[in-house]
Length: 562
Image (tube, rainbow, N blue to C red; front, side):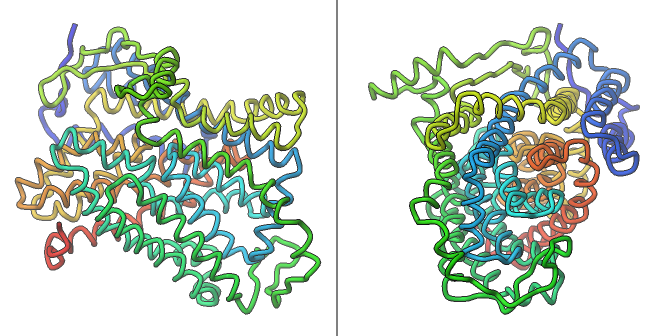
């Protein structure tokens, strides 16, 4: 039997209904930040609270609520959990084989300064991975790299989450922007242009903000030239590519330009003092000393060989995201190329789309239409499979024995068991929130802000990404609502849609999924509450900046709207 969503279940009162919809979210914050539960326990209990609100207050049939949770749990395992497992596995392989020692030396030969290492790895390299793959791989890989370089695990995870703000809107080859075109009817290119006139402000600021968090104002000024090179090169490329090429390439191009610009700049410029963390043996700042012995310790071939696992990861992930290869891997290719046709047949065999029993087309949404619900499993097309292939090739490059290879995989699986459980439960919570109508209730409440809606529009995106863990999902969830509300209050719809995506990027660092992924990657499983407390204030501050930018673009800066 079908069930129709009711967005005002408490006496038809939107405010009271919104307070009810907030219960699971507020509980989750309480569980992690005040009660300091372990992540997987916070995830399980938050899911139970969400199920209770959905059934007892929103009137959702219990069977449908449970099945929506199962749909989310499956998505939490694949593709998200699969990416985390393979990413950590690949990193562990480089450590076990001794390759990471060479990687560490190569970065140190470029700069021993922790501030500059954060810019290179967390900001530029992380943005590249976000543009190519998304879904947690950027934070997992870049945070693990920083820990390997000697960063405190909590700091590494937090810095990478904050650095990931700049590229999220154009992540996974532009999928968050492209996905908005369907439900809103506004061309992805137009949305891309508008987002590309908002995020470059953040992209310029994020490198400075990262270093301020790490070291304070005085130490940040010491590396201001490098900060400017990193941020401005990224922002300019992001603006140009998003406005003249489209949403697919801004992250990849911006990250590469920023990475190479900073690397080249560091060949000619060095900070007067080297910054290291107080916990390190050489805590005090010292004059840089790049001995000839250290510079010639490894040959260029050895360095290339050591970096090859991550180069392979980049190559495979990039291929997995390319058109028309991407649809072929999932069995959706419709062209005439023989090779892609063969891949397409394999992709069909390894792609499963199963209707969720008792849920598929049995919930009537806000548009009056039934909502489709599938367990969608793409074994070949998943980004985690691309990373696994990189790991398999790495086995032979690093000359690892089969015993070490499988032993490392089992070790990664054991370490990640509880983080994967947390990820599955929080994604399940997100699906229950959406299927019951709680998310829409909260969105409708913010939409009532009238003339102040341009200021609050990014909050919808922030809320959506916190709940779903994905800028793509947040854009699909609130895109239509943003457009309709913008038209009512006299705001340009394309600005509202861009605000949803730009605001969403600031919510990524506090999303339960992202927190779990980052902790798992750096060995902090069970300490998710500490990481959330670290990132929460930064998320709110950056959200405020996006709100101000959007409000100004709706008024005095309206000439910026395409």
